[in-house]
Image (tube, rainbow, N blue to C red; front, side, top):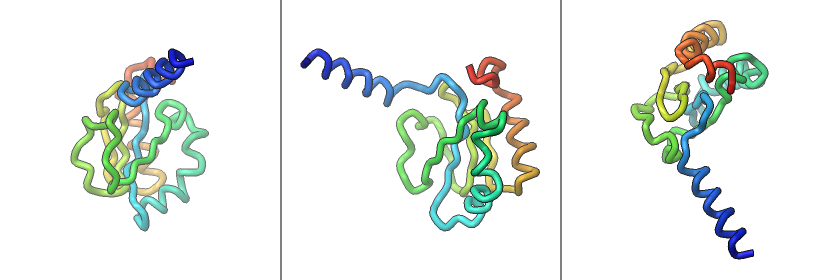
Length: 123
């Protein structure tokens, strides 16, 4: 039993310190941000159903919280919302602010095109 507990603890620690193998879209937000709220209303409910959402699942981070250890390479987060596309421990690009639904999708598509093909396919 003790060996099982130690193995489980080791797996948990490894999960906290490893870099995700797939792309993610990091949304840096804060409470009472009107542009974050606009994104939530216009895009947030459908994002996970889109090709972009499948290629880069959304991960939300509050700008006032410390960055998770696996994202410590991201810097310069000043404005909300900021969308940072990451893949295998590196930043691919970012969208600062929310320019409206139509512009958002176009800008995000340009970032996703920079991903290696295997990341774009979600593998």
